[in-house]
Image 1: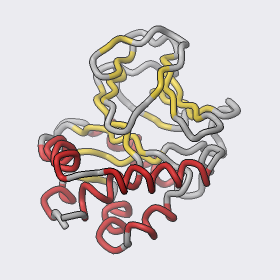
Image 2 (image 1 turned 135 degrees about the horizontal axis):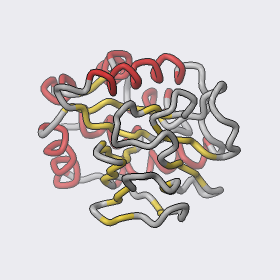
Image 3 (image 1 turned 180 degrees about the vertical axis):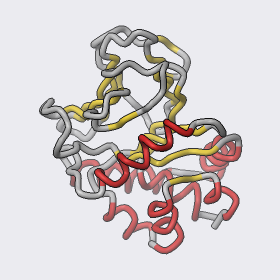
Image 4 (image 1 turned 60 degrees about the horizontal axis):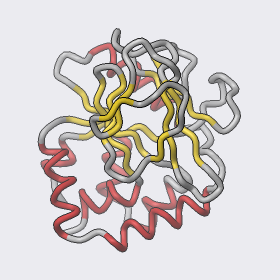
Amino acid sequence: MSTKLLESLRPTPVVKELRALTSEDFGSQYAGVAFLMVRIEDDAGALLQGLDAGAVAAATAEPLAFTTVIHSAVTRVASQTGAAYLEAHRIRLVRGNYYVVPLRKLSDAEAFSGRISVGRAHNKDVVLRDSSVSKFHGWFEVDGSGQYFYADAGSKNGSLRNGNSLAPKQLSRLDVGDELRLGSIEALFWLPGTLWDVIRRP
Protein backbone atom coordinates (compact mmCIF):
# COMPACT_ATOMS: atom_id res chain seq x y z
CA MET A 1 0.00 0.00 0.00
CA SER A 2 1.32 3.42 -0.96
CA THR A 3 0.91 5.78 2.01
CA LYS A 4 2.31 8.65 -0.03
CA LEU A 5 -0.36 8.25 -2.69
CA LEU A 6 -3.11 8.02 -0.07
CA GLU A 7 -1.94 11.34 1.35
CA SER A 8 -2.60 12.95 -2.04
CA LEU A 9 -6.29 11.92 -2.00
CA ARG A 10 -9.51 13.30 -0.53
CA PRO A 11 -12.12 12.94 0.90
CA THR A 12 -11.23 11.11 4.12
CA PRO A 13 -14.01 8.44 3.93
CA VAL A 14 -12.78 7.19 0.55
CA VAL A 15 -9.18 7.12 1.82
CA LYS A 16 -10.26 5.05 4.84
CA GLU A 17 -12.07 2.60 2.56
CA LEU A 18 -8.99 2.27 0.35
CA ARG A 19 -6.94 1.42 3.44
CA ALA A 20 -9.38 -1.08 4.92
CA LEU A 21 -11.30 -2.83 2.14
CA THR A 22 -10.26 -5.65 -0.15
CA SER A 23 -10.48 -5.17 -3.90
CA GLU A 24 -13.76 -7.09 -4.01
CA ASP A 25 -15.31 -5.14 -1.14
CA PHE A 26 -14.21 -1.78 -2.54
CA GLY A 27 -15.66 -2.73 -5.92
CA SER A 28 -18.94 -3.74 -4.27
CA GLN A 29 -19.04 -0.52 -2.25
CA TYR A 30 -18.87 1.48 -5.48
CA ALA A 31 -20.68 -0.92 -7.80
CA GLY A 32 -22.20 0.92 -10.74
CA VAL A 33 -20.09 4.02 -10.12
CA ALA A 34 -17.18 5.61 -11.97
CA PHE A 35 -14.84 8.20 -10.43
CA LEU A 36 -13.98 11.72 -11.51
CA MET A 37 -10.57 12.43 -9.96
CA VAL A 38 -10.54 16.24 -9.62
CA ARG A 39 -7.12 17.84 -9.24
CA ILE A 40 -6.91 20.19 -6.26
CA GLU A 41 -4.54 23.14 -6.14
CA ASP A 42 -3.27 24.69 -2.89
CA ASP A 43 -5.54 27.74 -3.21
CA ALA A 44 -8.70 25.84 -4.18
CA GLY A 45 -10.74 26.74 -1.09
CA ALA A 46 -14.08 27.32 -2.81
CA LEU A 47 -13.62 24.26 -5.03
CA LEU A 48 -12.94 22.10 -1.96
CA GLN A 49 -15.99 23.44 -0.15
CA GLY A 50 -18.20 22.52 -3.07
CA LEU A 51 -16.70 19.05 -3.38
CA ASP A 52 -17.01 18.41 0.35
CA ALA A 53 -20.68 19.40 0.26
CA GLY A 54 -21.19 17.13 -2.73
CA ALA A 55 -19.52 14.22 -0.94
CA VAL A 56 -22.07 14.43 1.87
CA ALA A 57 -24.98 14.48 -0.58
CA ALA A 58 -23.47 11.66 -2.68
CA ALA A 59 -23.47 9.31 0.30
CA THR A 60 -27.22 8.79 -0.22
CA ALA A 61 -27.27 9.28 -4.00
CA GLU A 62 -28.04 6.70 -6.64
CA PRO A 63 -25.62 5.50 -9.34
CA LEU A 64 -26.71 5.43 -12.94
CA ALA A 65 -28.27 2.23 -14.25
CA PHE A 66 -26.40 -0.88 -15.40
CA THR A 67 -24.73 -1.52 -12.03
CA THR A 68 -23.89 -5.13 -12.84
CA VAL A 69 -22.39 -4.24 -16.21
CA ILE A 70 -20.17 -1.51 -14.78
CA HIS A 71 -19.10 -3.73 -11.87
CA SER A 72 -18.03 -6.35 -14.42
CA ALA A 73 -16.07 -3.67 -16.27
CA VAL A 74 -14.26 -2.83 -13.03
CA THR A 75 -13.28 -6.47 -12.64
CA ARG A 76 -12.00 -6.67 -16.23
CA VAL A 77 -9.87 -3.56 -15.83
CA ALA A 78 -8.41 -4.84 -12.57
CA SER A 79 -7.45 -8.15 -14.15
CA GLN A 80 -5.77 -6.50 -17.13
CA THR A 81 -3.57 -4.01 -15.29
CA GLY A 82 0.14 -4.68 -15.47
CA ALA A 83 3.05 -3.07 -13.65
CA ALA A 84 3.71 -0.45 -16.35
CA TYR A 85 0.02 0.52 -16.49
CA LEU A 86 -0.18 0.98 -12.73
CA GLU A 87 3.09 2.90 -12.54
CA ALA A 88 1.90 5.38 -15.18
CA HIS A 89 -1.19 6.13 -13.08
CA ARG A 90 0.86 6.37 -9.86
CA ILE A 91 3.07 9.01 -11.44
CA ARG A 92 -0.05 11.08 -12.15
CA LEU A 93 -1.12 10.96 -8.50
CA VAL A 94 2.36 11.84 -7.24
CA ARG A 95 2.27 15.04 -9.29
CA GLY A 96 -0.78 16.48 -7.57
CA ASN A 97 -3.59 16.17 -5.04
CA TYR A 98 -6.92 14.71 -6.14
CA TYR A 99 -10.47 14.64 -4.86
CA VAL A 100 -12.28 11.37 -5.60
CA VAL A 101 -15.80 12.20 -6.81
CA PRO A 102 -18.17 9.25 -7.37
CA LEU A 103 -20.32 9.93 -10.43
CA ARG A 104 -23.80 9.59 -8.98
CA LYS A 105 -27.17 11.19 -9.59
CA LEU A 106 -28.18 13.32 -6.61
CA SER A 107 -31.79 13.05 -5.49
CA ASP A 108 -32.22 16.85 -5.25
CA ALA A 109 -30.33 17.68 -8.45
CA GLU A 110 -31.88 18.59 -11.79
CA ALA A 111 -33.95 15.79 -13.27
CA PHE A 112 -32.01 14.91 -16.41
CA SER A 113 -32.83 11.23 -16.84
CA GLY A 114 -29.70 9.17 -17.35
CA ARG A 115 -27.38 12.17 -17.05
CA ILE A 116 -24.98 13.26 -14.32
CA SER A 117 -24.62 17.02 -14.59
CA VAL A 118 -21.42 18.97 -13.87
CA GLY A 119 -21.14 22.69 -13.27
CA ARG A 120 -20.69 25.61 -10.91
CA ALA A 121 -24.37 25.81 -9.90
CA HIS A 122 -25.37 24.25 -6.58
CA ASN A 123 -28.06 22.07 -8.16
CA LYS A 124 -25.62 20.05 -10.30
CA ASP A 125 -24.72 16.46 -9.46
CA VAL A 126 -21.00 17.35 -9.46
CA VAL A 127 -20.40 20.91 -8.24
CA LEU A 128 -17.13 22.56 -9.31
CA ARG A 129 -16.96 25.99 -7.67
CA ASP A 130 -14.52 27.72 -9.96
CA SER A 131 -15.00 30.86 -12.03
CA SER A 132 -13.76 29.08 -15.17
CA VAL A 133 -16.57 26.51 -14.91
CA SER A 134 -20.02 27.37 -16.29
CA LYS A 135 -23.14 26.95 -14.16
CA PHE A 136 -24.01 23.99 -16.38
CA HIS A 137 -20.73 22.91 -17.91
CA GLY A 138 -21.41 19.38 -19.14
CA TRP A 139 -22.76 15.95 -18.32
CA PHE A 140 -21.90 12.25 -18.14
CA GLU A 141 -23.99 9.43 -19.60
CA VAL A 142 -23.66 5.64 -19.58
CA ASP A 143 -25.10 3.27 -22.19
CA GLY A 144 -26.52 -0.22 -21.84
CA SER A 145 -23.09 -1.83 -22.02
CA GLY A 146 -21.74 0.26 -19.15
CA GLN A 147 -19.72 2.57 -21.42
CA TYR A 148 -19.35 6.12 -20.11
CA PHE A 149 -19.54 9.27 -22.23
CA TYR A 150 -19.06 12.97 -21.55
CA ALA A 151 -20.56 15.97 -23.35
CA ASP A 152 -19.85 19.67 -22.99
CA ALA A 153 -23.10 21.61 -22.55
CA GLY A 154 -21.96 24.60 -24.60
CA SER A 155 -19.94 26.04 -21.72
CA LYS A 156 -18.17 29.41 -21.96
CA ASN A 157 -14.64 28.01 -21.56
CA GLY A 158 -15.22 24.58 -23.07
CA SER A 159 -14.06 21.06 -22.24
CA LEU A 160 -11.01 19.07 -23.34
CA ARG A 161 -10.50 15.31 -23.45
CA ASN A 162 -6.84 14.29 -23.57
CA GLY A 163 -5.97 17.77 -24.83
CA ASN A 164 -8.56 17.81 -27.61
CA SER A 165 -11.46 20.28 -27.60
CA LEU A 166 -14.92 18.74 -27.44
CA ALA A 167 -17.72 19.99 -29.66
CA PRO A 168 -20.71 21.28 -27.67
CA LYS A 169 -23.50 18.81 -26.90
CA GLN A 170 -21.82 15.85 -28.62
CA LEU A 171 -21.08 12.72 -26.59
CA SER A 172 -17.43 11.68 -26.38
CA ARG A 173 -16.56 8.12 -25.31
CA LEU A 174 -14.47 7.89 -22.15
CA ASP A 175 -11.73 5.36 -21.44
CA VAL A 176 -10.13 4.63 -18.08
CA GLY A 177 -7.33 7.12 -17.48
CA ASP A 178 -8.68 9.82 -19.80
CA GLU A 179 -7.75 13.38 -18.83
CA LEU A 180 -10.59 15.90 -18.80
CA ARG A 181 -10.29 19.67 -18.51
CA LEU A 182 -13.46 21.56 -17.63
CA GLY A 183 -12.65 25.24 -17.86
CA SER A 184 -9.38 25.33 -15.95
CA ILE A 185 -10.22 22.34 -13.72
CA GLU A 186 -8.22 19.18 -14.46
CA ALA A 187 -9.65 15.73 -13.77
CA LEU A 188 -9.10 12.05 -14.52
CA PHE A 189 -11.75 9.45 -15.39
CA TRP A 190 -11.16 6.27 -13.39
CA LEU A 191 -13.06 3.21 -12.24
CA PRO A 192 -13.01 1.96 -8.62
CA GLY A 193 -10.86 -1.02 -9.59
CA THR A 194 -8.30 1.31 -11.15
CA LEU A 195 -8.00 3.40 -7.99
CA TRP A 196 -7.74 0.38 -5.68
CA ASP A 197 -5.08 -1.25 -7.86
CA VAL A 198 -3.01 1.94 -8.11
CA ILE A 199 -3.02 2.36 -4.32
CA ARG A 200 -2.95 -1.20 -3.05
CA ARG A 201 -1.43 -3.56 -5.60
CA PRO A 202 2.34 -4.16 -5.27
